[in-house]
Amino acid sequence: MIAVEGESNESLVLDGEWLEKQRMGQPKARLAAASFRSAEWKEFEKRKKLFGGEKVKMVQLVLTFEKPPFIGFITEAEKRPQLEEIVAGLETAAG
Image (cartoon, rainbow, N blue to C red; front, top):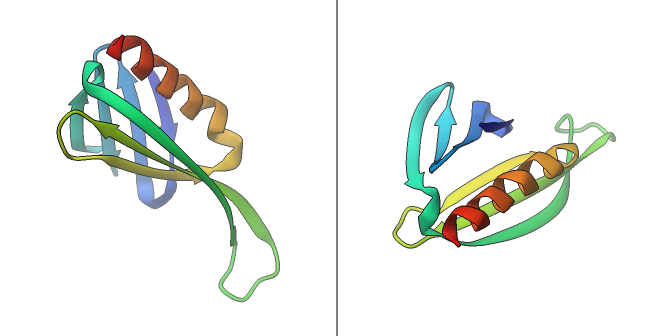
């Protein structure tokens, strides 16, 4: 099982044959890993505080599957290796 915490109290969990997106620990979407089709990555920066000067590097991942819904997920850039692990697991399951 691979789990990654993200923005807005969301998390992605890959558990064998299923990918689940959770918000505040409650499941919001559950899709068969074998139906995975593609992943799109985007890196960007955002400010830590509205008028602060300090910025944080972020990564956005959009996962598409055979059938809707697609799954969008945003987290800190240092968690990208964990997301890459999830994508690799999905690619393996999709064959």
